[in-house]
Image (cartoon, rainbow, N blue to C red):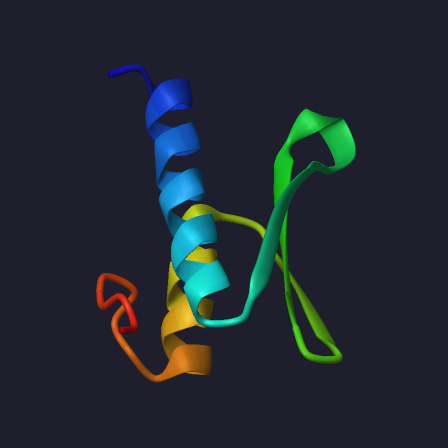
Length: 71
C-alpha cells in the first residue's frame, strides 16, 4: 500500500473514531501544500500537524486508547 493510500486510510479511521467520540475531524491543505488536521469538539478547535498528533490528542480528549471504539 502506498504512503498516500495508507495515510488516507489512517485519516479515515481516525475521523470515524473521532466522530464516535463527538469530535469532528477535517483534513485541510496548509501552507506549501502540506496537510493540516483540524479537530472540533463542542466550542473548541485544535489544529494538529500530523496524524500522530491527531491520535495523541484524541487519546487525551477521550481518555481512551484510539483503538477502543465506544459502544
